[in-house]
Image 1 (spheres, rainbow, N blue to C red):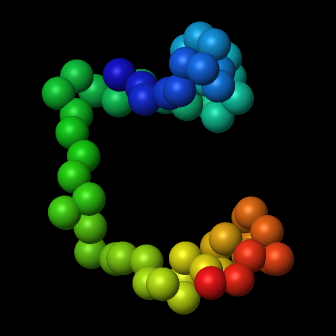
Image 2: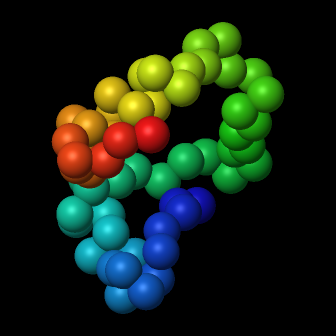
Length: 58
């Protein structure tokens, strides 16, 4: 099973090609509650500046 946004990619084949995606095994689940590392406000600001816009200030 893959999660993709149909509106952005149209079909799963396009998504797989764009991201070199691989299906996960049946029964796979994910919970962020199992994370051992978390983003901070400062790290999120840095990611926004790098990947979105350095003009955004918060």
